[in-house]
Every structure is written in structure tokens, then in C-alpha cells.
Image (cartoon, rainbow over all chains, first blue to last red):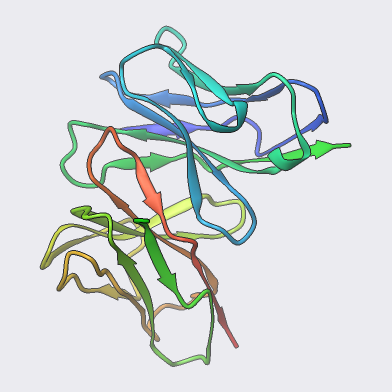
Length: 115
Length: 112
């Protein structure tokens, strides 16, 4: 079975500082990996996805993530945090072998940006 | 523009009442999903449907029911059997494993 672990339910960074949100997955085969962002009382919006092409994936709003098979990780980064980045972030994994439920989500990381 | 529409955005229910949450998509996606979100617990799958007239239970289906009579629509009914229904409910659709989900904007249900 697939699973996703997000280390750190709350992360605080200063405006302009590096953002690093951690995601590790368990999978016996190369998965598809996703990062989503959620603003208060809204749905989730896709930030970026890895689908076995380039291991460094660039997404919207200046975010990027690197797939590291050896570490089973897909950490999300942004060089310089902006106040508008404050939100909840979810990592998700898709098991392409599974014809039923397709996606598994982490429990989320709440990002606070300090002015 | 294509997307998913959830209605209403806020819903209040008295104990013992059934309520139905609407989810409509015009993305021509085959698969649709309902998730429940509670603080600190992430997203938990209630039901999903991969094709019209077929749906499967997720991890927390007890106290909920769904139907999929049309490709575009996947309504969720929260029944009186659901003991703790106050939560944020998210509907999503997908066209395949490598495309991810498209989410609606959610419905916040409160039992009063």
C-alpha cells in the first residue's frame, strides 16, 4: 500500500527566507507524486506534480520539488517566502497500479510566514 | 472555464436530519471523490466513483451515501447515522493517475 508522511505539521519561516516542506513516501514502484496548496475555507490547488519525467519539478508561485528515489522523498521548496505563501500544504501519492482509490494524502503542513 | 462546483458553501443541520451536498463538474472526468477534512487529520476518503452508476466506499463511509446517475454529478448525503458530521467536505474529480485531482471549493457543514 502507498503512504505519505509529511514531517512537521507546522512550519514557520521569515518573509524572504527559504521554504522547505518535507514529504516522504512509501512505494514499491515509482509513484506519481503531487503537492497541493489549500488556503482557508477553500479547496486544494495543484502546485506541481512528478510523473517520472525530470526529477526536479517546477510549479506555480515559484515552488519546486525534487524527486529523490534513494531517499523516497519529494520535498517542496521555495527560495524566498512571501506572505501570500501562508497556507496548508499537502503531499499526495498516486499508485498507478491501483484501479480503485488512486490517491493518498499526507496529513498536511501549515506554513506561517513571519513578516 | 471548466471546474468543479460545490454547493452550498456553508450548511447548517439540526441533529437527526439528513442533508445533501452537491458536487457538479464540467471537466468530463470519469472519476469523482468525496473527502472529509478535520483539523489535524488531513483528508479522509468517504466515497469514490470511477464510472456512472458505480461507486465504492472509502475509509469512512459509515453514515454517508452517494449516487452517480450522471457523469457530471456526485452528490453526497450525510445521514442522521453520522454521529459527528461537522466538518469541511471536499469533492474532487480526476481523469487519471498522472493528472492529479481537481478540487471543488468545499462545503462547511455544521450541526446545530
